[in-house]
Length: 511
Image 1 (spheres, rainbow, N blue to C red):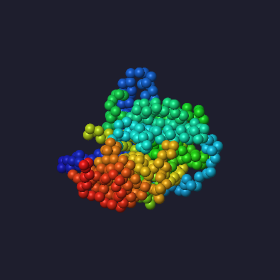
Image 2 (cartoon, one colour):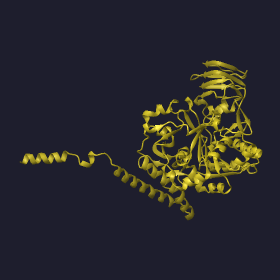
Image 3 (tube, rainbow, N blue to C red):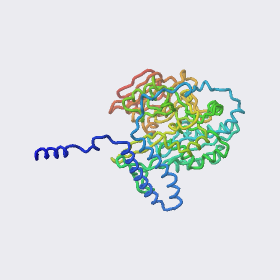
């Protein structure tokens, strides 16, 4: 009997409790999320307490802190969600129209009427650090001594003058770009273009492990704070008061684009179609090529129009996402949106359900998360939202010195701030240009090109290593120039290279 009792007791000790045998329940997850949400709320209150001015403290609590808490709570709710690949369908014919199908022969009077309804907004929160520049990316010179910002202002000056209109320019800055941008804007004081600015949110990075803010003070070093992506546009525009100002002035639609997309100009055919059909939101998409495999794409998901970003794709389906066969178009981030619809969507708090992209960062060996959203992801909250498939000539972003090389070459000319492809080019696509890390930063890039490069007939260019160009060099067909480690290649002024591979060592010295 004693042996039997001991055996029973040992069996009970060795048997795990029932709770450890089951998987984590939804209830447990909800309890954990509630606790994490409460901890975040307390941390934000502690940060608010470091703001001395009572009015400023209340404004931060009601604005930035409340916005971040909503974003954080949404992340907690969705962090274990995954995209169901079998529920994804390509967009149908009703979801995407072609630009050619809506083109109309609009008179100047019709364009003028449309212009009175319009404002133009540029996303101006990014820095030029990826190209080795200090300050806002928008102040980098890109063509004929004009910056990104100069070109946009020139475009709107010409549009307003030619149509006797008043299309204002709105800039969404980040805390990284606000101060420098305002200094630059002083030069446009007497410009015929009305320019308004507002700041997007400044949110705290959170520790990847504890999910608590990286800072305890409102004035902590800038590494602890971040601008939460352009998905923050609508709430920030609303909070700034600029949205209500525009509506009060009779503006009805906003054309949004990245300031570094030099081809994102006002298109009245698109605006006319939107007004005619009552679309609250239109996304310009363009055909995907092998160079665009990471771009977000429009999909039909559980019957809704949605934007699918590569960061949301399950690892086993990434190759399929990148495929041109299944995902045939991608988002240019040229967007046309009804101002009253923005106000309605923000006030309804529908954006609390927008897809969140947790962006991991490592600073000084410490892992952090930045919770970000994309403005394109808001498409699902607007009525009659569609995509319009536009030609490639409406998408010309400058993300690297290779992009800058194309824009600064003889391939493009300027007309009233708008880049126009040189008619001498026999085919409308840009050449593929790959520049090695020696050309990554603008200062090095400028130093290595001694002057004008002619690329009208260029198909493909690859440059790697210590390579230096003279002035007035012409490149045609496929050109590959590779200087191996320890070697240098000088391309003489006036050289003509067509379908050539240049390797080894070639030095040209002054005599």
